Image (cartoon, rainbow, N blue to C red; front, side, top):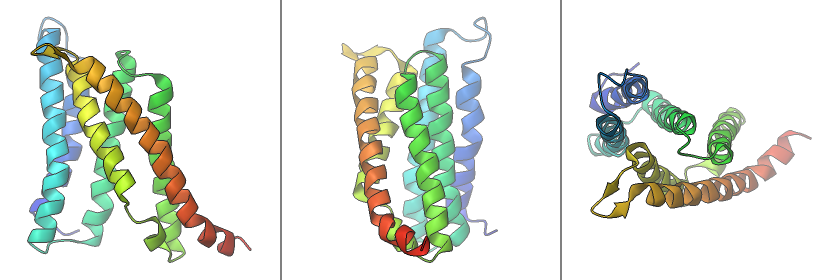
Length: 190
């Protein structure tokens, strides 16, 4: 396993997951709700920024690796799924939306693994739909984690709108990837 700054940042993102989740299970006497929500949202934002930064560094410093390419999306999926489960527990996100997003992540991960196994991974390479979905999620989740208004702007409403957009883009991008993979799937199942 190569160890470089981009991979360390990816591991840091994974290590932050228990921090974000754990904040919501601290006794109320340790941390008031507003502080807890602010810290969780801030930790999620820092983790989300490492997602962009580790990829940028890997490309800039020519430190890309097969392991990094594997670990980065795993870290993203773990972070998003953990946050969605916390938000579901707090009744800040609908169960149906959580199931759509988590189900898509599992489906597309399995599809990409299978397509790589049959040598057709290029047909399910990351597309801009997936990038827009990720951007919507990465803005919606901290809004919902913080759940407080800022300067009269309801982050809860903004988060609700963006997570709905993310869910729509989730289904759309999943259908796109499945459509792209279908010819190889049909060919290999003969």
